[in-house]
Length: 211
Image (spheres, rainbow, N blue to C red):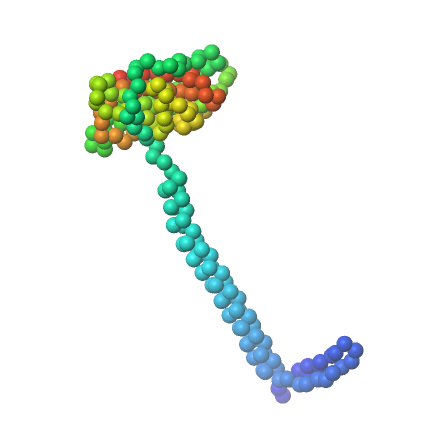
């Protein structure tokens, strides 16, 4: 004997009616309804993922364009070469920094200058932070512009905006190293170190022609 189920329809206050349904029909109806729900959920998830993927593809080129337009070149060439005398002298009253083990080498194959040095804090129990600039100079008159890294404007041979420099923080010492792309072989390198308040606390010059 095949099983049957009685479906009773009840209103707000009384019974409206009832009807019988076979077990096989009930199971088939429930299966169809569950299948429809799963199909709708699947379509919804696929649609949501597609919209997010399209939005990401549209947004990605915009971000790349924004980054390309906002990111300046990190090296500047100074065509207006000042004299050797600098109007700003180091202020060593509050910070004692020294540069040790300076090394520099021009890679003629890759057309770049590599430099490396140890920035040492001589102050006891006092950490130091600030900004560093490197200026490549040619000693021969008319040999070309100086090269400033990172990019900034010079005022009488000294970086005008100290915040343009590479930031640093040291408690005892820190190894500073970088490379600067250039097709020119320079004679010397000048290192400027500013404090976070903008005071020039260290200025050293090194000969790199024979390095």
